[in-house]
Picture (cartoon, rainbow, N blue to C red):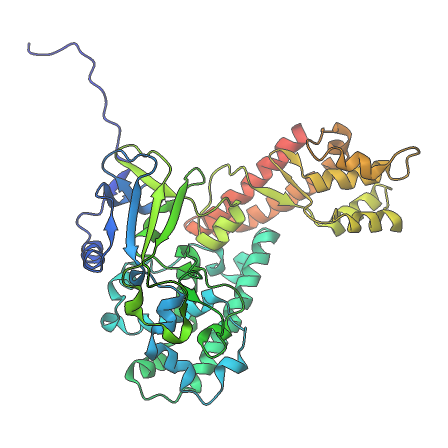
Length: 459
């Protein structure tokens, strides 16, 4: 009695929990609001089962909607660093001529990392205290794996980690030397000298690495005549910044978004000598979405189209079945393999290959052989064939390479060797356990490589 025969729709289990009662985030949101952050009122912070902390919409979001905008002073960018007088004392009140000694010796990312350390040690005295407190305490990039585990990783991952280590080693030691030669009596700088450590710098470096966004301020500040500023230390561009709240929005390759600076008439090409943070109080940084997001779903932005090695080593996550993934083959390995197959390349063939750049970008992906790999095999097959113009044959196929199963068959044993090598590495990695997120991501990616190569063999 009183029962209905209508089918009741089953509620889908929630894949998120809201952060309504997280005191740390409540304090951060309150501070951001007082500092002038304007966010779409549909957005809330949430924790998702698959991505962890992110941003959710309570109501439907349509293409063209602004997600948030903030004053430039609420971002940590090149101007933030240049107008901080106490931070600049580190370099100016020094026994060394730092700007000359270390001219173009640092990346801007390294300088931003050092700036975060400078604020981190100030604790509650820092303007950015609540923001810094909200940041992750650790990052899931393979750089932080033990060395014996790193040695079992894919060669490309190892190469990226090695380059990261070189940059961190060099910049950490440069800043350490600068601090050791600083003679300022400022209490903040004294505390920085005492607290500066490798672990803290690594944390700051990957905070910038994983959370920075593109921000071009060259239309706001005249970056010329920089020799007497901290910019003289920088060997690349300064077009990155940290943006509180925005850096909590996660990545999706399907997301489409646009950013823009909203300028006032008084903020055009300001000279470096005339910088003052108050000049930028009316400049705002805004981001719009070109996607539709349904109610109670996660909102995404795109960090750029990237293959998984970059996503893992730079940001600490991977995308399942990423279509941009590929497995590289070194030219030296391919050349040796061909020699063993009694297809030794002549010096003329090698010269042709090198002159046309066919010794690079040799890989297999979900579509099969890369163009260069395919073209290299064409050189093997057609270079000495009568009445054949190998250049014409190669480049007439640039607008759509027609698969040649003979080429696939030719390299199948080489691909099988690669599968065996990757499997050995995976087996070694699995001996270290499976309770480490970083390690699990590495294993999952390498298993994806095996799947790509096995599918290539089946084709």
